[in-house]
Image (cartoon, rainbow, N blue to C red; front, top):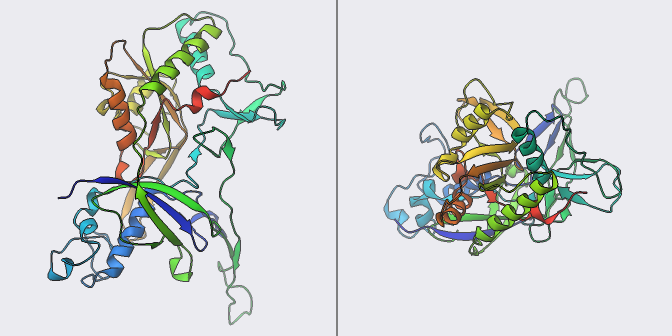
Length: 402
């Protein structure tokens, strides 16, 4: 088998994109603002099988149709997709955000009055310091400070996208509305359930993703998302070598220094423990959780359950999940592709922040373990882009909150 290499994919929409086919109600369907890695895998599988003379659409592999299986026939020798076909199950995709942006963490806040003076700021360090003071001094009658803007107004949670290099918020991709209607030939009115609105992403939107594959994909166009038979989902594909990721060691050191200042601001002394902030760049699929979701993440037991469900010990043995700022979704139900039942599973929202505590003297291997976590992701189905993380992201220490 060929060794895996990292490539960067730039996808440019040539027609409107309907990603995820998410229904807000029975007559309104809107697209996701990003392309999940699972949708990219499905798009490449469709491209491979469409070009394959041996493919039978009626076949099913392990209960799934339109799944890539290498057959090793004479027709496979000269196929440009042969390298991908042989190792399709080993190929790893990341999520494709719009324009290379990153999702804002759940700790990002903005002025409730929209004064425009502070923009969107991050409150992670203040939140950690506040929680640590409450835990280290449980008998103290002390109320946490309010999060205020420089104008004196309150801050409220903000969601969206930001540029990794500048930490500035950027708008989401442009959308385009389409209204569809079918007339009932007997009654002469709109057929039941056939008056609806689609809100796909507009043509021209760009997405950036990375893929670990044995060779660059031999295609210049993909069909991505839903309703591709009606002309949607055409994407131009440009491939280049992925740049080498930066060593997280410097980010870790900056985060420790910033956290020490935040602790001093609330009257706490220095700590010898090492703290790591894992910020989810894409939703993470947790393993089986006993008795539902650990809603009370202030409890040590619940945080320990979540850490085991995400497999954090695989990268950080002995680490404790000290703080968690997360949102959950439960997804499952009937799978339309083959009629199978999918047990409901818990997904952590993109932007969730998990803070790990490790004892002092963890050694030089810590930076390499962090780099490995960024390459592979946490939780399950990381090969489809779930659980991408950034360790001690600069965004958390680049903004100050008054």
